[in-house]
Length: 112
Image (cartoon, rainbow, N blue to C red; front, side, top):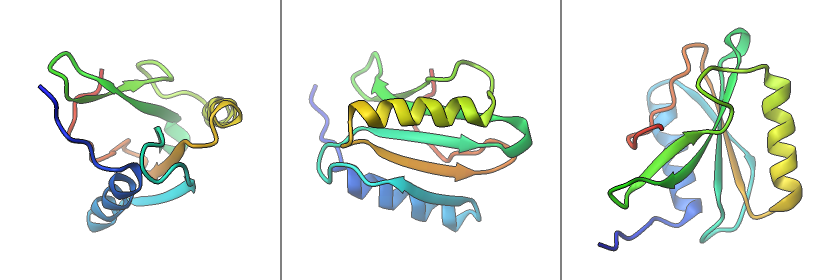
């Protein structure tokens, strides 16, 4: 079953507002393709480390997220290197960063 997707820019703007409504710092790090650019979501946990999430398709056809950095937070420098490598290959990516020492991200979709 086909489920319509929001344009990348609209999803990013909505997610920033959702985070801000809950007093989470969220800001755009890189602007990608307005309609269909991929999305990277950096969760900056400060001293607890950072995580990099990216969307994927769930078994039911909906959106899910993958922890590209693995199950546990990693050193922020490692996440920054991953982002730079991805942007070097694909300048259409959106990069959204959420700063929260508790690792909150406000995603509704499952994280695999």
